[in-house]
Structures are given as C-alpha cells and as structure tokens.
Image (cartoon, rainbow, N blue to C red; front, side, top):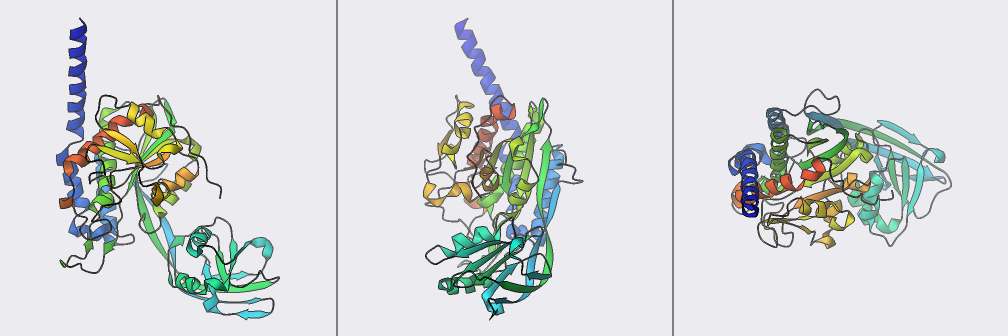
Length: 425
C-alpha cells in the first residue's frame, strides 16, 4: 500500500507539471517575446507610437485570457497624463535682490505661478556637503508645494539640472529650486511656462477572487524600453529590450493565462504591465496611487528573467528578500522542485528600490522584484544587443512556471507575506 501511495503521488506530480507545461510553454513564450522585442517595436520608448502598439498587443493577450477591466476602466489601458515644460521663464526677488531666470528651476503644472506666501509652501535649504542629485530628485517628486533654496556651492549641478526636462504628473504640486546662500526672509517668484500634456498607459487586467475579493495579489513587469539611439559598431540603433523587460512582460501575460485557465484564486489577481519605468517609474507610481496599499497582500514584480543568474539556470533571486517572508513562502510552495529563490546578491546596487515594486514597498506592501539577471556580468544590459536571440527561451519558460507554482498559497489566500517596513517620507 505504501509503495502504491508513493507511485500515485509521483503520477499526480507528473500530471500537474504536464498540465502546467501545456499552459506555460516555450512556443507561446517565444511567440510573445518575438513580438514585444521585434525591430518593428523600435525599443518601445515611452511616448512613442511603438509603445502604443505594444500596449495594444498586451491588451489583446489579456482579452484572450478573459481578464476583466480594472477598477471601472472601459478598456485594459489605464491612461494618465504627464506634463513637460516646453519653455519656462522665471524671475523673482529675495530680500530686495533680483533673481534671474538662470538661478531658478521650476516644476509646475500651472502656466502661470506667483509664489510669495511662505504659508503655502514647505521651505527647505540644501546646504553644501550633500549629494546634490540624491537630495534634489526626491524633492522633485514631493507631494507638497515646495521651495528649496540651494547653496551656490552646487551651481554646476544646478545648471545641469536646469537642462533636464523630465516629465511630471499633471497632479504634481509646484516645486521651485532657487540658488541662494541662505534662507531669505522675504521672497516672490513669478513662473510662466509653456506646457505640453502627454498621455501614458499602463496595461491592466483583473482576475476576480472568490472568497477574498478585496485582497489583491499583483503580478507586474514594465513593457517600455529605451527606444532608438546611435548605431553601435554593427550598425544597430534599436534597443530591443528583450530581457529588459519584454521577459517580465511575457511572464505577466503567461501568468494571466495560467491562472485564468487554472482557477482557484481566492484573492483577486491584478496583472499589470507598467509604462515609463526607464523614464522614472511613472507607470508604477501612478498605479500605486489608485489602490489602498493595505489591501495588497503581495506584489510579484518580474524583471529581466531571460538570462542565467550567477548560480546558473534553474533559479532566481528576490530583491529585499530579508524585508519580509515573501521569499520563504515561495520556496515552501515548491518543496519538490530543484528551483531555488535566492536572496538578492547585489544589495550594494539597491535594486529593491530601483524597480517598479519600489513605490508599493515604500508603503509597506511585501512588493518584491524577481530576477535572474547577473548584474556583474550582463553584457547586453541597456545595449542594442538585448535581443531575443541572446536569451534562453527554455530557461525563461521554466522561471515563469516556477513563479506560477511558487505563488500558489498566496494566490489561494492560504499564506500572507509579512509587511515591509514603511519608508518615512
């Protein structure tokens, strides 16, 4: 009887693997990759016609899997708008001294802004001795109207910043940076801007849960890349972004198909491919603002899983592994598999806060990125050579399958990863 039970268990395991292989298979993975990373997509750069084509392709795949629309949307596209300054003219007065345009950097969704009331703004002073860009960039994403006076010791960096024209959300409160050696007692600034409004779209599909509909599990990857640049030595100018991150996008599409056919998800599953990760993570930031983070049980962000890790094929690593028990739960779900989820070996590169999981992780969600990329030896990272031909489709398929199985108890509502410690703003 004991031998019979062992044989029966082995047969069931083989049957489960075969059933999964039929849903997530190398042929279909290769088909999707060849579309997303084709030369016709021209690198899927944010704000390009080609990224719109990629979005429509992903939406069709979600439709084929029978996913529902997200949160009242009328399509799979979650469209939002970014603002760019085509031209800005600024002037001001501080303690009676006139301040010229070259000493002011302004980010504002308003065509005309008059800033003179201290009570309307959070006032900061950036003294010398700090890393300028690491200090300033978080300010540029502030959720409060802010005026930061910047030490003239940063004049060179300030001038570099002024040449940047990074897009910002249309809901962004005004942020003004001014070169100054001390906080003024009185000030008045006038900002006149010519603004351009540009659309971006995440692609989202939902598989409603059964008994725990209001608890969400997110599977994500970004579908944008770098677009077209200068030709390399081979004359190739297209940054195809096969590994980064057509591989993660393909995983999200395949997982949507897998769970739609398999069923059994007690929690609601959200499948989302983000736009503009390479431009500043705008897609994931907007998405994060539309949800209550307390309702998100876990986030599986998938990035660059088409090349072998530093340990070889058949494994992946999880960023921020030590910040929750997310990784331990995943490994527990595949006890009979040789696939291993390792802790992130590149902690010096701060990968946990460099991908689309970062915004939700900062809000306390166990949001982690799964990757296989060898960050010490990834020859085609952000290069024209990141093409499908350089990837291992069997490994990619195997990794997607491992994620599908490893997420089982979380999807079924039987396990809930511990929360990540929130970041103080």
